[in-house]
Image (cartoon, rainbow, N blue to C red; front, side):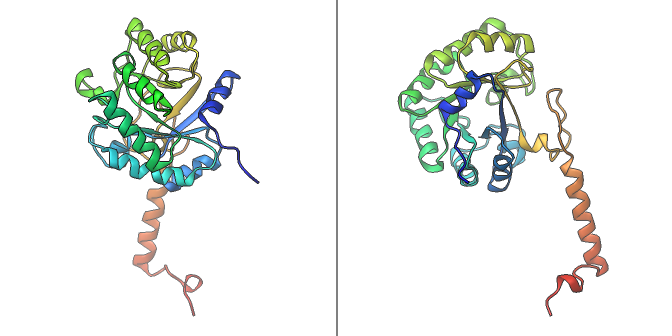
Length: 265
């Protein structure tokens, strides 16, 4: 049975019909395939892999080549979901030309459906240039992890209403097909959502956005010591995996594994 692929126009059409959109981050073939089969609408190959996969304290160190590497794995696993790849720090900030070239690399080398970059007004020329190259782009306003040095830290709720409204409108006018809203009070996120005609995807932005995104390993309970207010854990896979490894270690050390049922004669 064939599966209908979600395209950028299809993604926007779902939102226009009032269906809440679902998005999770994934970074490899295994988890992307599982999420796709489970019915997720969109998968983001987020630059959060710098922290979740690579162990850095911010998203800044991950490179364009590394994003492309992980993007390829995710695209190979996905049959239905829309796949976006984050443009990492300093892959688009230098100039619109640089941004178009790097966005083009992402699309050509990964086969992803779209790219995402951080910024609204300040990146409007860049969003416009990428869109004019026929590359779908999602904007990202509110808390911008790549601006961690300027903002003074991660996890700060953004409350400058006029700036955020202006950012969202500038992104829409420049050709963004959707906007990710991060760490914004729910009433303001609702106001932003109602002020634009393109979908909004929230993370820590309340229930009034067109859809929601979470970091996959966070939602699955695989990451330790990370409990922000906006995160709901739907499983505790870290403890299950830990127990399984401990049991394996114990059985091997005691000679209980492999037994006859796991050995060839």
